[in-house]
Image (cartoon, rainbow, N blue to C red; front, side, top):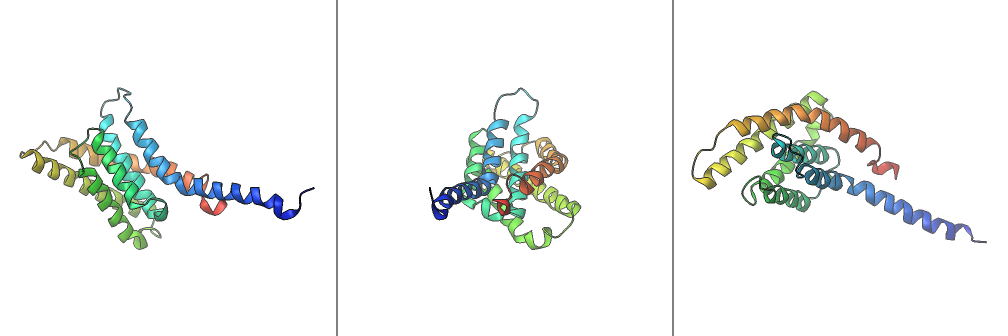
Length: 181
């Protein structure tokens, strides 16, 4: 028969695998969601959902689990958005990195705050990111682009974040909870 320490070795390996998968969960939700939103479902305005989803995930996970979303991954997700045909190469990589940096800078004030303040801060940061994207694309194209898509993106961000946050909160407290590993 096996003794106690021998039986614990596989248990520790499973616990380590469980902890690693819970740590990787924020990265997986971000990347998986971008690929799903990149599929051709024929939904009108589907392309506008990709940056809103990316901004929502990066904002949420940077606020509540910053160690699980490293900056190089954020840059890669921004480059993925750019490759999907959304904008010029590198624009969303810089914008998402700026969103993450700003969220980390405001983290001490936002984490203990209520949801309405967190939501308002997201609306402000997402609107600023949309405006900066419009400004960068206008400068790169040497002409002023229409403002309609910027307004649509800001409205989508404001309207979709509560639902996305509800799903991410459930995941954060359930299958992605590192303390339960």
